[in-house]
Amino acid sequence: MAVVDAEERPTPESRPPAGLTALIERFDPDVIDVPSGSARIRLAVDGEGEWDAVIDDGAIELQAAIDRQPDALLSADSATWEEIARDVRGGMVAFREGRLSVRQNLHLGVGFLASTSAIADERRLRFESVRTRLGKISTLSAGEGDPVICVHGLGATKASFLPTVAALADHHRVIAMDLPGFGDSDKPLGAPYDAPYFARAIEALLDELEIERAHLVGNSMGGRVAIEMGLLRPERAGRIALLCPALAWLRSRRWRWLLQAPLPMLGLIQPAPRVITEPIVRNLVPGGKDGWSAAGVDEFLRSYLTPRGRVAFYEAARNIYIDEPHGERGFWTRLAQMSPQTLFVWGRQDQLVPLAFRTHVERALPAARHLELDCGHVPQLEAPKQTHNAIREFFA
Image (cartoon, rainbow, N blue to C red; front, side, top):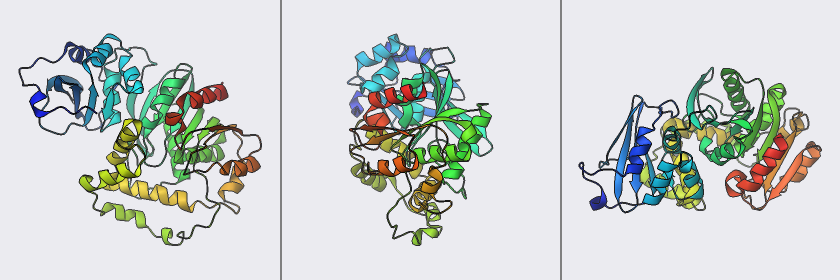
C-alpha cells in the first residue's frame, strides 16, 4: 500500500493526472452500490499525490485529498493508472496482478473500478443490494449463462470470490453474495446464523433474482451452507463445488455445553476499539499485512468492528462448533442423502479442515469427486488456476 507524505499531497489548485480524470468521466452510478449513499474513495499515485473521488447521490467529483480517513483507498504508480485509463479492463487486471492495491473496503474500491470501466454490456462486473424476504443481501456479479452462486466463509465477504467471478464469467452468470450478518448485507439481531438459515437466504436471493436453479460454490462455512442448500432444496441446486468446506467435528467438543448459552449477544456490548483489535487480527492471520490476506482482514474488520457484525460472527462460529455429527439429524447421517453432484477441493496445508476428512466424505458420498491441491484453506485465492479449471470442467 502506498504511503504518501503530507507534503506530497496536492494543494486544492493541483491538477489531477489525466488518467484519474478519465476514470471520473466514465463513472456509471448504476454499477456501484454505495450503501450509505455517499463515499470518499482515495486514489493515490505513487510519488505524485492523492485525490479523492467523492460519490454523493449518484454523482461523482474528483477533489484534492483532505485530512480525513477515506472509505476506500486505491494505490498504484503513474504508469498503472494510465494503463487503467486506456484499457477499460485494466483496473481489474492490475488488481489481480498486485500492481493496484485496494484497501479498507473492497466493496467500494472494486465497485469504483467497475463503475469507471466503461463496459456497457450486461455481462460487466456490478455491485448491487438485493431486497429479499430475509432482508438486504449485497452481491457482486458478472457474466451470463447458467447461474452460479458463490458463498464465502466465516468472517469473509463476497470479495473473497472476486477471482472466481472473473474466471467463470465467460460461461456463467456468477453471483457472489454477502451472507446475512457479513459484509454489506443486513445483520439482523436474533437471526440463528446457522446453515439452514443461510440456506434460506440463498433461496430468498434466487427467488428475488428469478433464478429457478443455480450451481453453488462454497468456501469453508460457505461450503457447509452450500451442502445444506443441497440437502434442503436439492431442486434449486445444480452442481455443488465445495472448497475446503466446514464439516461437523467428529472428535469430542469439550466446550459444547457452555456454548448452549446465548454468549454471542455479548458482542453488542463488547469493547472492540480498532486501534487494539486490528493489530491482533493482522498478527493472527498469516500475511495479514500484505496482498489478498491484508484485504481480507480489512473486510473482516468492516463487520467485526460493528456490534451487529460481532454478534453474527460469534453466532455463526458457535453453530459451526456445535454442529451435531451423528444421529437422525446429524450432519454425517444427512450428508449420505445428498442428491446434487458434488466436487470437493481439499488443501493439503489446510489447518482448519484437515485432509483426513476426505475419508469420511468418501464413505458418506461415494460418487463425489475430489481434488487435492497444495494450498491452505482458501483455494480460490491460493491456487486459483487449478481451482477454477476444476470448477469450470465440473460445471460443464
